Length: 103
Image (cartoon, rainbow, N blue to C red; front, side, top):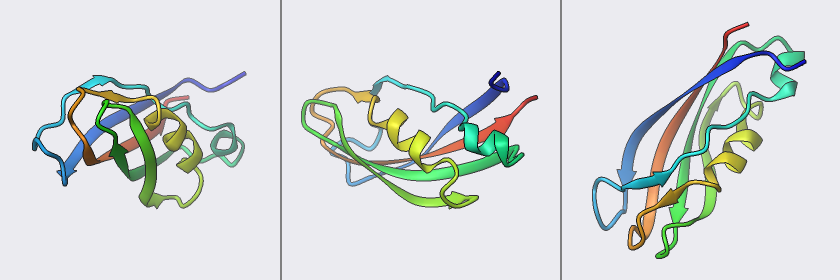
């Protein structure tokens, strides 16, 4: 039913973190959106900024740049809200997620 897909996660840059290299304890890859499959969109990318609370949980996600616009945003936000960082990594952290549909 759903097309097989691969999502490459590329950490782009750390911004405003207490430590330049935030230690990620848990990464959750976003699902390839059904909307993208229906529209025959085979690739895309999203650059997002996460706000990290003192306990290491992500407290907010802001899409900084997306191509194509608004196709992968919801999937990225949902997945990044599940990420966990080492406690004490309070600040913001940017990541770039690249989507490729392999079917």
